[in-house]
Length: 253
Image 1: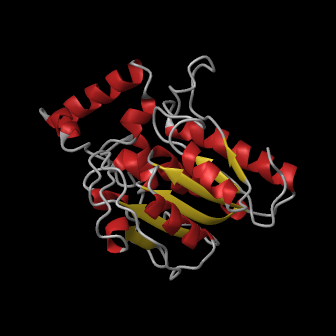
Image 2: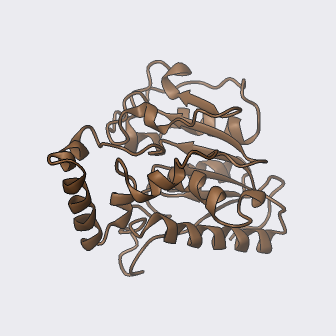
């Protein structure tokens, strides 16, 4: 861990079937090149031999790993608070953890959630097949996903346990946390894209195309999109109106 920085540490949270070396790793190098002190972990993996198969444990279990990591970052750096940036499941975790992990919200300043399945994703309608015979078939599909080792896949689908818990009628955003949601209108994994948004006071819900109309990035592409990166840095630094040069981005859905 690089402990030299004049900014708050930034903790990066990867998505489903990713790791600290896959997905947000390019963004992390970009941040470090701009003077940020970054930290990333592999969470939700059943074996260190296959780190690419991470983020698959139950959301609640992985959330505990993330909370412990944030505490370790603060201990090693002496920082009072950290900023958190997550993509996909990592973005969901950035919202979920502060709500349910004791003391985590107080350890975080800014949260940037890139394409979180906040209200559950139907994966371009694929998950609708789970409801062919109603709730019963949905429960069967959920148990199958868990038996195949991907409890997080069940958690993040419509009516998934973690989605239901996060949207329990109580505020998602915790006091002291400044939350920005960024997503793409071209997202074909977290669908519909608006499911990412948190409709609560003070939350900034952004489509990247509202800032860069020619941006073609989809769900996977958002992690590698310089337009998204710039919006994330603007949020972390609270320079919401800072201008930047847009790129077209890769059309990776």
